[in-house]
Amino acid sequence: MSLTKLRELTVLGAVRDHPMHGYGLADALEQHIGWALGLKRSAIYAMLHRFEQRGLLSRETSKDTNYPERHTFHITDAGREAAADLQSAGLEDAAAPNLPLAVVLMHMDGLSPEARAAALRRLRDWRVERVQETGHSSDHDGAAGIVLDLITDQLRLEIEYIDRLLAEDSGGDQL
Image 1 (cartoon, one colour):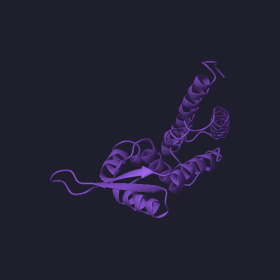
Image 2: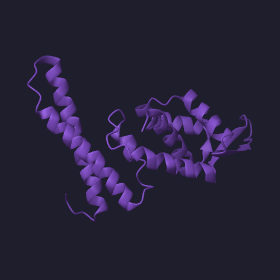
Image 3: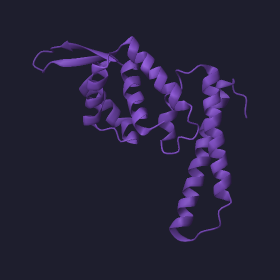
């Protein structure tokens, strides 16, 4: 899944789960998960506008006392379908090496148990292969060695979290 598509899925998913006004959405995403995707306020507003033009979102305008008008965004049926399509297509990419695993994982709850397990296994297998390949690298001194250690440690930690999700899905059975 491309970073652009993952950003779109994150914004659509947030509106799907919590209809809110643009400022609140941008604030929430910037503070919580958006930073991991490089999502900036201006990009969020631009996406909201594009999604509304494409019929994926609708907005309701309200006026609260002295504050300016607020536009609360709601996902439409077409938006739900687009989010589901993005989710399915994105998780077909087993590796997603250029994306933060945490952000990829947060979009798995909407999948069927079978699709979720298959996606988790693909993500896990790719990481296991990378650990094995990295382990066959010759020893390096200095920053190169530290970087290889960091990458390997990160992959092992990601495997642990994927294993936890797989165990939860199978009722606590270990792999």
